[in-house]
Length: 87
Image (tube, rainbow, N blue to C red; front, top):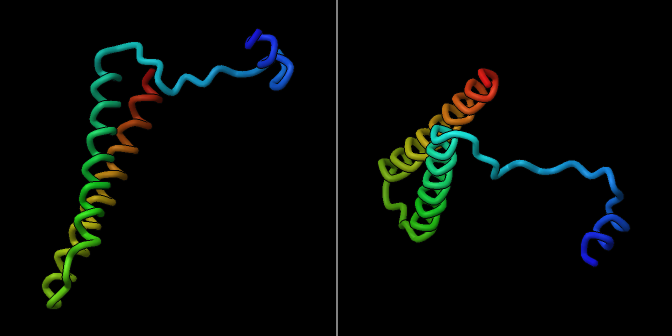
């Protein structure tokens, strides 16, 4: 019944989304690493909201931390693109 309903709404030519399809141990490690990094970034920004800025040095540390997160995210994305192009 649900399959019939799905075909009525989306048609019979829908593409499968393969976001969670993992074909090797390296892909599993990479996806787990991405999840861990996202959890750490969210936790960092939660703690950041409760931070009291008292000096210029606090702002400097905050800017450096955000820069490190941005660069590491960019490097992970670049590494992911390289791995996908090799496959």
